[in-house]
Length: 210
Length: 139
Image 1 (tube, rainbow over the protein chains, first blue to last red):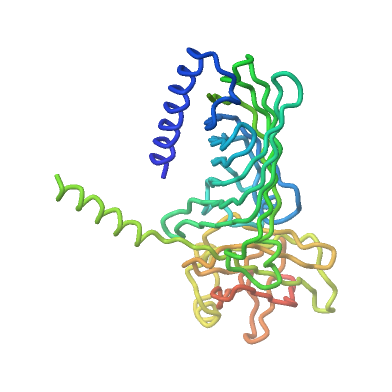
Image 2 (cartoon, rainbow over the protein chains, first blue to last red):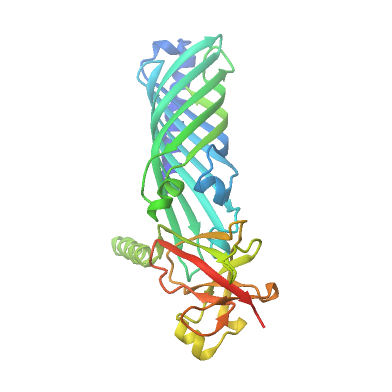
């Protein structure tokens, strides 16, 4: 999966790079290009927004975020997003020392709408679906715990481009994830506590596009 | 080359299949009370894994600290005497344990003895509610 993600990232990056050169030579405005491709690489902070399983069991941490956007025109399109964080158990009532490390990763596919606000500043609104996994690495005796969460996501992203050509920009965004799945087997009384979680990811980094 | 690739894929499949993965979260809870049925607050109660897997074995062989393996899952009973743990449905033999220096033991309703350990005999259930657990001073 890791290799796949890296290959996809490289392909998108090289594609967007070649597009940039072409655009520079013709000094076109971005709106003239019917297909906009943009990749983003951002540092990311994970925060729980409710008092359920994820917020009680884990201490949340910083991680990273990779994003790719394919614009059908300049202002609308679809995007893909990948987030990854390392979690630590933070409450003695959960799982304990048999599960020393945990990793959270999340894929998301979204539709977006971009609106220029002021000069090189653009705001983006997005809606999509996500699929996340918390993998708790266990000792040999206990095996791993793998918890899947999926649901809907919405977010707002601001990009400040560093030039009028809109090739490189600084991006700041927040996504809110609403987990709606019931994939973790648990007692009926705990179903909502364990499976229904709301969390946000705050991402800050760069975007490169054509 | 093809054969090497095939062997690698087969090995990956076999390892993938044998990896133990668990997507359960079982709840283990109860209420600590004294003989007068009053809740007991501020007692540290631990979930441990144990060599012993039935109350009968506990009665026959008695309790020894070497029977338990601490897994660092614990709670402190609240003002209503309640405690709660969350654990996967794993292959471990689970037990509840009260540290000896707290001077309390679980009183067994079936056996005429008391021990600082209480064997969890049905960790396959998703919801293990021990309800009222009577604690008595240990001698």
